[in-house]
Image (tube, rainbow, N blue to C red; front, side):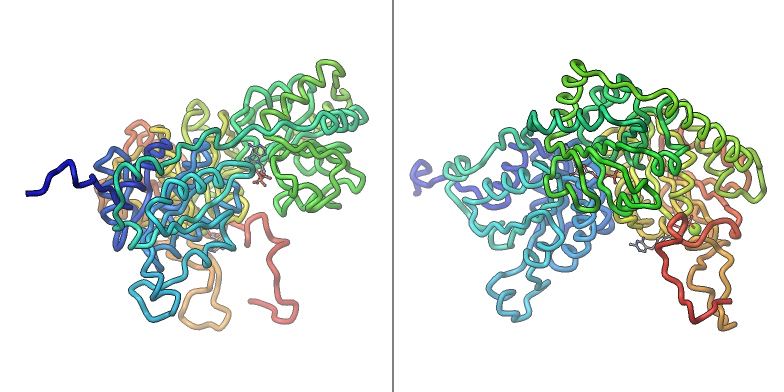
Length: 570
Ligand code: ADP
Ligand code: TPW
Ligand code: MG
């Protein structure tokens, strides 16, 4: 007979991973199971971690990434080896590009076989494959290192500029055993994972010196500003100085789009005229014309608030960099302004006001027309009006025209409610973001999807219905990518490269899973459907039929689309 006291209690890799996640308040996993992580998901669920199962790893990863953006805690995605891992990688790379904190945990096959390329089941050198696309990539090889591995992954994901982190867990590690007491001691509770970073006083003074010279100042708010969750300080900075602001798409709602200082409807004018611009958590990438003329004044001088020192001077010289977390930097500016107040010149504010009024009048002509079938103006105006008194609703948005019109027409009234194709302009985030937002918030979500965009993650309708999430999907079907009236230049029977099925009935897809489907060709029917779907708070899909002749090639990105100067298309 064995004496129980002599046999040390054992733990193993599976248990240590779950214990380490729980110790660090990771309460949800998004994934797809299979060898070697099925038991990991089971154990996590048994131990009280919520496991959300998806139909494709890319959507699971997108859900994790947006959960990270909304909560400032890394969203964790769990995938199987090789193909599952690679499916999740697009989401991890997208998270890194967008500065969202996320951890992709993937099981992996036998390293001895993988490294000699001897043909293992799902063989792939995953850690090295992940490295170029992730902020950091780690592999844990010994069970006693699991605690450290997870701590490093969490810290890498959320500290400094947030990003995607890869964590490789070989099958052998998961099954490896360890004395339970040794295992418990090896766990790490991460203390102060994203430490505050206080900007240098000289940098604050330099920024205020520059601002003091401004005649036409402008603040640009990026999604870094939304992520930071320092909404009150940013509002105070804007309102105390009277500086007009432009929100980048995911920063819409940080201050209400109807705020009198919003310059969104005079965007081209203010970018071209501003002499001092304060960038707050926004990069001077393609979305801002790289800060260059003719979109910008060639003489513009910039103050940039960012957590990442190497972001400075990446596109345009920055006269006054302010490196720190946005809470600390904004507070430092506010403190400085108490001593040296700044007020925006009235002639600048009134010139902007005049441009806004003029542009709004021009826009109203389009918005007030009510063509049948609908165009993007009338369809998005309907969404705008239905959402006007529902600021709590998350708006997910992808497509080309569907994205551009959605961003420009739908006002946001609360911070971090607009989630879209982001820095990469990637298609496929729709259902993953919608699910992630619904899971972490418990609040309703509306996903505004181009018919092409929807196809990239459409099978997650089953996931939405399985968990009975309060998600309303609207498919804006104009019959294709950009528009539905493309013609095959060869005269052959295949449709043109941009064309998809205008005659499809997307609303029937959700009915297969017990969700509510609606079909609308006019704004009254669309409005009724939208109100009914939102009131029900259950999974719903509204097929919104859009005139296939409406939509612009590449949406608002025409200048980025190379066209052959030699071949003339039909
Ligand atoms: P947008 O696309 O909305 O213009 P970007 O994603 O280009 O925004 O820029 C976000 C910026 O915010 C990044 O440069 C990132 O380093 C920065 N950032 C993210 N979180 C913080 C934070 N907490 N404090 C300061 N800067 C941050
Ligand atoms: C992963 C290229 C950009 S926009 C778009 C594609 C395929 C779809 C536009 O059609 P949609 O919208 O959604 O119907 P609309 O309103 O203009 O008709 N693959 C990936 N990402 C991108 N960006 C593409 C392809 C693209
Ligand atoms: Mg389309």
